[in-house]
Amino acid sequence: MVNSEEFLPDQQSVPDGLSPLSLIVEYDSAISYAVQQNRIPVIKRIKVGNLADTPLHALRICITSDPSFSDPYEIIISKISPGETFTIHTIPLILRHGFFRTVVSPVHGSFTAEISYHGKPLLIQSYPVRILAYDQWSGLRSVPELISAFIIPNSPEITAIVQKAQDILYTWTRDSSLTGYQTRDSNRVRKMAAAVYAVLQDLHIRYATPEAGFEQEGQKVRLADTIIGDRMGNCLDLSLLYAGCLERIGLHPLICITEGHAFAGCWLIPDTFSDVVIEASLPIKKRVELGEILLLDVVTATSDTPVSFEMSVISGAGHLSDSQGFFCAIDIKTSRNGRYNIIPLPVWAEDLAVTDETPIPDDQDRRTEPDNLSEGNRSYGFIPTPPGEIHPPLPFFPYEKRRSCYPRLERWMHNLLDLTLRNHLLNMHNSGSHLTLLTPDLTRLKDAVFEGRAFHVHHFDHTGEVIPHSLLPHDPLFGYFVEELGRNRLYCQISEKELSKRLYNLYAQAKKSLEESGAETLYLALGTLIWYET
Image (cartoon, rainbow, N blue to C red; front, side, top):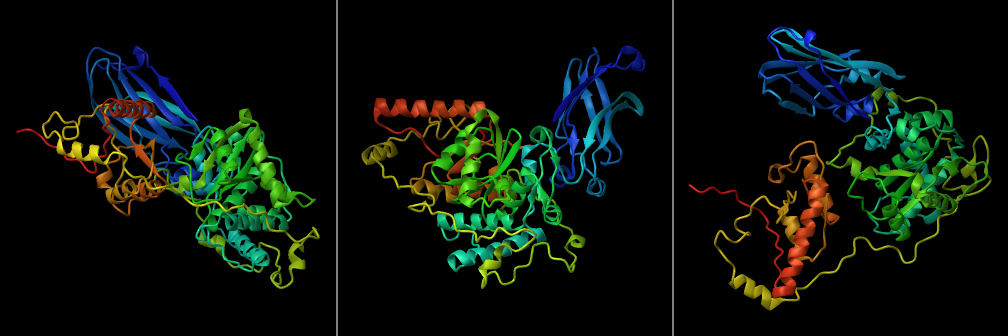
């Protein structure tokens, strides 16, 4: 949750000769280990206002914390004119790793902002924060995509589950390979998802009721080792565990949050949503109807009466029927990309110590004796059956090449091209007549355009300005833009409202020109040059 608090000192608290100040701090009131690991800015914005008639110089702002969960941060404001407000964006407060890793239950703390002039304090104001346990999710009120940090595909427990899933897959298909989307077969992806579900059924996990209001306020998450050790988990715990298994085998999972419930999803094709948080249920419904996404209520794996994978899928899709109770869905693959770059909580070496106990019931002869598949504390007395297939299997990324309908007009436009500064193609201004696309790899974009592919242009929200030509191949954003280009998505770093306005203007102008003159006037410039008149 982002708080905005203001402190206006009275004249008595200000030393003689100095002007009064106003202080507004916008910050996230919940801080956790996941926030520290993913370098999420805690303090979003600081605004210092000069309420007097004289300028202020050399003001020092110092931020400290209690308990000491962050390093002290200082910044000097050289000058604030009368009536002016000086704004500091995204304060790089460094959170201490050693502190957050050891927090096992929520703690109340605070940070203090002090404004001083030549060592004399002018304002001192404290702001309360809630320090969460290392395994506690802060909920949708804070940073929703941080739920991806609790999906840990490299944990040893998930490794064991995936190995068991290979055995089940071998029983079904005589092929135990978990190859993600490499087979380009949506039915194979469906079987892999079903095999993981069958392993979770075989773990005999007991269902635990989630905390009230966990959707907004968050909750402590049972990680994979706790679920396997205690044989207990609620809807969010099990959905995160299932998503971790899917991510481990190269699939793209989803986490869906509705009122009082959480369930998982999986892309059946190698695609993602352009945004990490999908707040409307309609886009997901459409993908489900097209057979591109399956939704799964993982809680059904805890039933004493065996519930098939198909019935669990039906149950998962049924949760979308109440659009009013739908909060959002989080696309885990998108959250891992360079745009957001949410990383899982770390698995430490001491957590991987070899013990005599195995986290999964040992069924060594499953491949040769499938009757032993459900041995454990309680026996289902059944062998999981493979899921039904989609007929025909979904094609991956279909598109058709497009040929020009106006070859002669293209030749005329080439011959009649205006080479003066009146030509907006040669003399572009930062106006509503064009869009600057964030594309570091122009060669790939050029090839995609020549193939006749259609693109969707999206708003790109980022903490700082992105300069495409300065991105190097090892930069996470470079890889993110290349992947999104492969999914026919382009990005523009302007506000969403301004983007919609410019796209409509471009469309209207191009349509009008085509109707009046028969000529296309919508162009794509691959690379631009900044020039100056001397």
